[in-house]
Amino acid sequence: MNSVSLITATLILIAGVIDDMRSRKVHNWLFLICAASALVGATVTDGFAGFNLALIGFFAGFVILLPLVLLKIIGAGDMKLFSAFGAAVGWSTTFDVAVWALIWGAAFGVLQVALKGQLKATLQNMIAIAQFKDRQNLILHKIPFTIALLMGWLTDLVHRGVLR
Image (cartoon, rainbow, N blue to C red):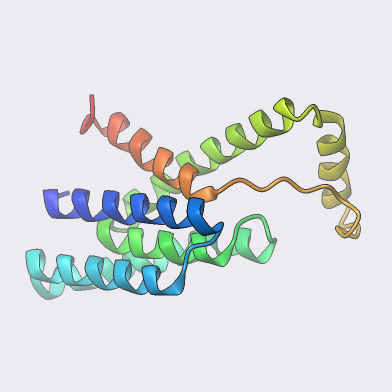
C-alpha cells in the first residue's frame, strides 16, 4: 500500500468522524468527495489497474456493511463512507478493517450500555431481536460507527506494522 492510499484512507475516515460527531450522520456530499478522491488517487498512482482495484475495494466496502444497514445496526452513511475508504485501500484491507471495526463497535456499545447501567435491558433487547420480535418497544443504543471504523483502521495499521 502506497503513502497516497494511506493518507487518503485516513483522511476519509477522519472527515467521516468529524461529520458524524457534528451532525450524527455522514452526508452524501462528503461521501461523493471521498469516493472521488480515492478513485482519482488510485488512478493517478497506478493507472487503469489502480482504478479497477479501487472499484473492487469500493464495492467490497459496500457489500461488507450492507447486511448491517439492512438490519438497521448501522446507518447507510457509514456504509457509503466505508465504500470510499475501500476504494482507497482495496478489498483485502477493507475486509480486515471491517472485522476490527466490528470488534471496536461492539466494545464501544458494551461500554456505553455498562456506563448507563442498562446491561440487563440490552440483553433482553438482543434476545428479542434474535427472536425477530417487534423493535418498536426496544431501547436501542447508538454509537457513531465512524469512530469504530477509524479505530479499526488504526488497529489494522498497527497489526501490519505501519504504526508502532
